[in-house]
Length: 368
Image (cartoon, rainbow, N blue to C red):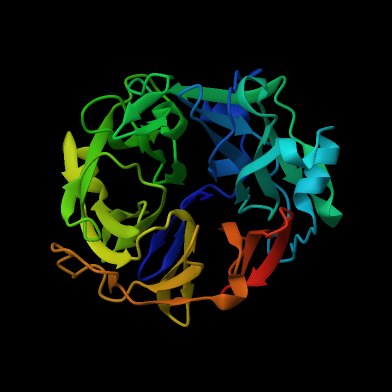
């Protein structure tokens, strides 16, 4: 979803290297990564793709070798994308699930994480969209890679809580981003306060730890620490590195990075309530006419263009909210049906659009 940059509310600064480096420089070694599921994606330096594997409770760094190109000239457009992926992977549309998309900021190439099959027959794949909108499968054999295992992931089994049965392992990694030389990963951990954020220095090393997070959820009128962050972006807000994170029923919450570093449990500041009965799906940050915005896709409330004005100074929401409150936003009607998105370049965003008939289209559209 996110590639190697940190968004500054005063300026946009690239932190990932734009020079070609050897895989060994980042600790990658040739082999075959044992990826059990391909979920959320993010790009790091030198074309390195981070893959979240919730089933395997691990994050993989894969050297794609994709370092030369011109993202300003890229314009991927594919109608019936899921049908083309099914053909590529020798499957059927019904057995293909596109989990995430990420654009390589060095080249503009789009990468998709895919699940082929269902249940115990499911297998992961990474699909790349190259020049002339040609699809190819990224080989996961004899590739340079590195692996970080989450030490506190939930057990891989179904549990029933409040009458609902689910497997919390499926949400061990809900989103990824690379910034300031670290991989940030949201998701669920084992324990009484499962909502968590991990900060993992890259190249990966042993001794990973996570921080439990809690929020005041205005729609529910209470403090909560059990729901995973669904999507987030790193931002530098008035000089303070932070994460802006979206949760189910759509509270938008600010977490200073220092709070996540220095505490076993950190409470964020709820800067907006964007409507209940909704799940945020994907989010990016961008600058337009000197102002910073968030673009958030949702399961039930369309795509929102959210203002970040005064987001650093708001005291936050601390009492029950009937519907929406906090940061102002507008719904972008032209982006109806968007489920996944990522910035392509300074002016455009790549979106995955889900139609009511089940087909999926990939489009390049101007940032609203």
